[in-house]
Length: 426
Image (cartoon, rainbow, N blue to C red; front, side, top):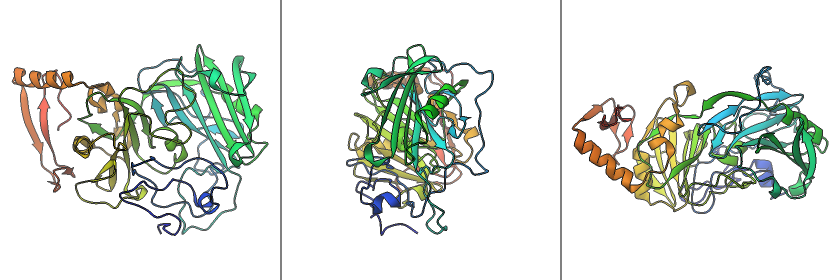
């Protein structure tokens, strides 16, 4: 059942905000968090089923594994290789940090859950019976790289100590929450982490609960973010700024962390700032960062767009549908339809169900996500001509769509060995 009595689903206009049904029916009783993927003219992927019943509590279910910090692990490193996760999930008392799902050029993001509180970060089947309403929690952890976070921008903060290191704490009751707490602390030299927690329960999590949770943060084996797609084309000047596994980029991904999305990539021109930050890119509202476009890879059921063969475009976005998966480029008008279609034509989709087979994002994007200039493109053409080591390969297992986009197992392209390695064409 599509909740069209609550929200009119559009196919060429900006999609509805991704709020749960209680928020919509309450007509703005308060601002909890924005569950949406874009603003302005970009109509991007949103949930097809809106929470019409009470969300299932985030914790206390047997299928949720309890993760503890490794006993012998050290502090989170202040710097790491690009788009690399450096900490894991862990639990302290009734609070749990999930493993991070988003990594940018400046930070990593992870959801925070609490026993007995409900986090509305996934759709609820309206056909399922309602469960008793629990108090709500919206919380997340941001671990910034060295020099990325500016603690002087945290207004009204009180100085605290976290695990022997300096910290800052803010407590308020804005936007209708019983308690909103922000805890920032220096987890390593010149490197800060921040927990934001908004709760219906004024006493839980308490300021001490958050300090205890912060003290449990430990490093883990570095792991490069992986995605179920590879890209052969990104417009000149754009570079990868953020990537999310099983989510959308940024705080939109945190707000819908358990919706079952596959991946999201954010590119920007110029690159987004990596110093002086006070919050993740796009801010608390999840706005599009300046000069950016995003690629979303989500199940068809999570989209408010009807599946259509080939490539189709609306205002500021283009879609490609492959085997029940919606791949969308959303630019809010910053890219032409021709450019967005060219990006989609160059996307190859892997096995979205098995992230063990996914590709390191640094290998899935041209030149590891660094900006590709017009000079790079000219050089590549010259090398292709000079080496005479170009071969045409085509594996025909299905068919092409009417627009020229590939479908199923059909892939064809130039495989270039000029630089000692084959291209993504197989």
